[in-house]
Image 1: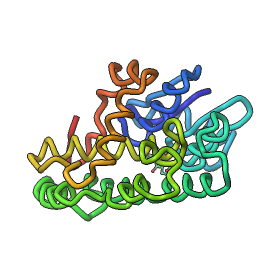
Image 2 (image 1 turned 180 degrees about the horizontal axis):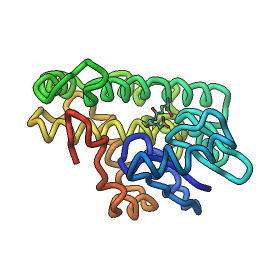
Image 3 (image 1 turned 90 degrees about the horizontal axis):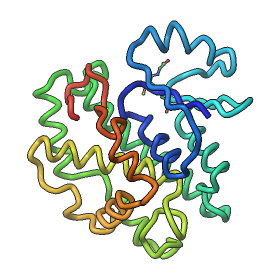
Image 4 (image 1 turned 135 degrees about the vertical axis):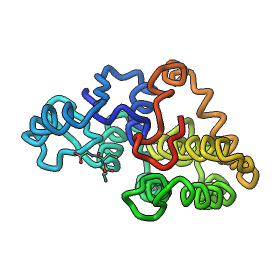
Length: 229
Ligand SMILES: N[C@@H](CCC(=O)N[C@@H](CS)C(=O)NCC(=O)O)C(=O)O
């Protein structure tokens, strides 16, 4: 498989973690500049899929674009979408829910979004967001009566499903943001999310990733208001 994304964590981290977790064989193409993606590789990806974007995943004859579609694809390949129809729908719901959270961060960190146009506006909004982190629904899902794992994982009984990876990445990015801003602990009102965060961080097949340069990459592109490591 070939995974393509910028040389940042961004949306790429979610896939790097899934592929590492499953100990898959893959090439992690990290584009460090516009030329290497837009001029060189994008036209080739476009020839395979006109929806070419970053991230993309090439797997044999398949070329999949759009984060949630790639997650569904990998979820099917690795049995990480859930077994029952109800679990599969919960996975899709969570993928959309966490993408809303991601978009709220993107709105804040990139000045071209015109939500935060500079560092000062970013700090005010990011302090508000980390002071009241957007994880109440995720806490409720972990405590909900249909949770197969008794609240340890979001969908599956025995480990993370695809949605868990994006949720964990967003928890980690909010944690980093809060620490950098001197905001309170983001887990104060979310003990179940905290336990999930810690269990995930301890997963044996992810230790190589957490020790790697990929985990140390910046969360966002350098043009971001909040340039946090
Ligand atoms: N909705 C798309 C968004 C993709 C997207 O905005 N990609 C950005 C980086 S996060 C990009 O720079 N794409 C490269 C391009 O437009 O060719 C997804 O989730 O995959």
